[in-house]
Length: 77
Image (tube, rainbow, N blue to C red):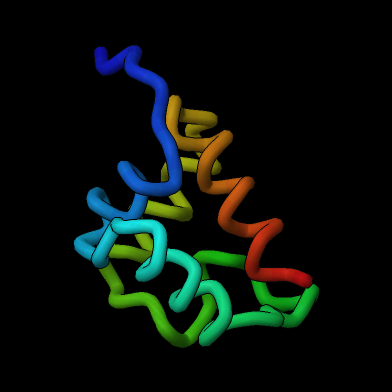
């Protein structure tokens, strides 16, 4: 089991997205605000595999859940 700490950068890597700070900031700016009624994994900008990873990471309360929650919060304001 992977017990390493995950960051936004490693989450973006896992999702196959550019993970440098400027790219993460651009992604958040481009896709915010995400409507409160839209679950993060159902946002229209995810591929099906990205959406599945996010949904399962939260549902399983995996070691990714905390950083997925962080991304969710960043996309809401």
